Length: 199
Image 1: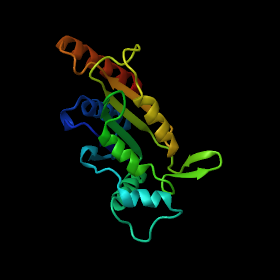
Image 2: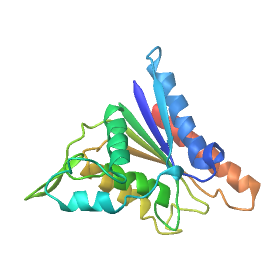
Image 3: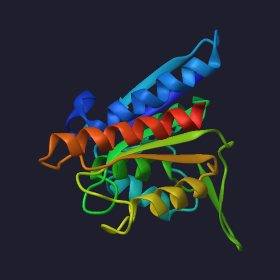
């Protein structure tokens, strides 16, 4: 099994979202037993955003004969996603939604004629469905209506556009709270929810 993990926090492996994603990996692997698993890690923080040649290719009816600008990178990221049996997204919530690093990855892989087609009924994904786990960290309280959450519905919608419907979200909240006991309690809640899912 090949697991693709996209992590997009500037804090790298020290980020709460990454640590939550690692907990997901560990719990999942414990279920898989002797299954051989390869984890392909990509830190999206280093990705450039799509550029002018990419935009021009989207407007045309077909891809250019020679890929230019960020198009080769987009091709590479799409191939990497296609090869994955499962996808894990690890991301902090920035201003109620996805960080720009994750948005750059999304913009590269959500691409007409490659991961979806446009029909009279709307966009139809062309990727085969597979498990997707999303590990989200928030500095404050999210659930209970404490702050808006545009990240969860956005990710659900954009993943469905390319054919990914088996999406499970996990959250670790209060990571920026000054009270260490509150932060620890929030982490323990996240751990309990992940373990309950894979029990």
